[in-house]
Length: 66
Image (cartoon, rainbow, N blue to C red; front, side, top):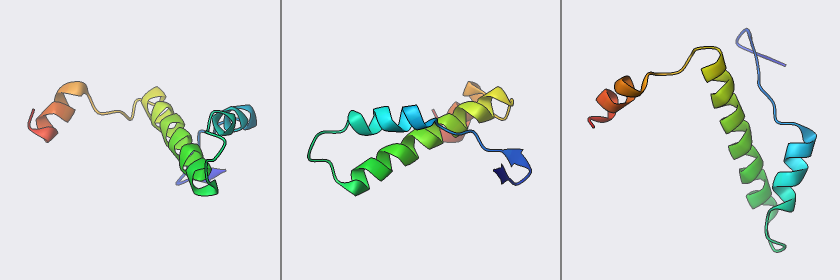
C-alpha cells in the first residue's frame, strides 16, 4: 500500500493477534481497534525515524517551550 509515494509501515498479523490477546477478557471491540491503531501509529513513527524524517530532540523542546 502506498501513502503519498511512501510505503506504509505495517504491524504483522501476529503482532495484532498478540495485542488483542493482551486485552482484558471484557474488552470491547472499540478498545481492540484503539489498541491496533495505536500500535500502527507507533510502527509508522518508527518507520519515519528510520527514513530520517524525525525531529531532533532539541527542536521538539524548542517547539514545546521546554
